[in-house]
Length: 255
Image (cartoon, rainbow, N blue to C red):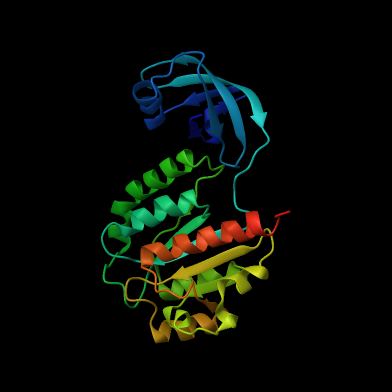
């Protein structure tokens, strides 16, 4: 069943107003009609089964039939801090990272980032980025839309990290050692509890520099390896999110 995300302003008692691009999606793509049902998600993560009452050119009016007791969010809040990659790789990371449960994305200017984004360049890209995240949230039946923070410099990222309980960074040098058990991702996840806030730093194509490694460790980050193979920057975050999902949602609670 199709899902749409709505703001508090769109709800009045048991009535809902669908506005903007979602109206076009309902009328032209889904070809809905009065009586059809859909699910809406509110800003605070609640879900409701709704029924369309009236359809107009710029607005769809619906009523809430029942509030649903459901959540598909990861039991831990995971933020992906991604060193700015080349081309459209960041769009791929946003789309697939949303499907895999990331709560927040932070693009940051790493020492080895080839692509350079200032605030103005990021602002031009932000609308498309947010659209990708929203559509991926709807497709994967998320309860919340992940947050996208503005591009950060490395120093600002370290300051941002102070509010997190678990801080990790993927470091390709750790993947080269066969017996470095202290850097195994699974070992780090064993110490993660539900409701922890996890910040995972992924470097750009050239990886994280030695100087950045030193700063990260000084700021309380733990270096981890994501398997024994060297992953592309657009693969690393997805590997990590899939691992967290399996470890926290499947393996930990298996019979």
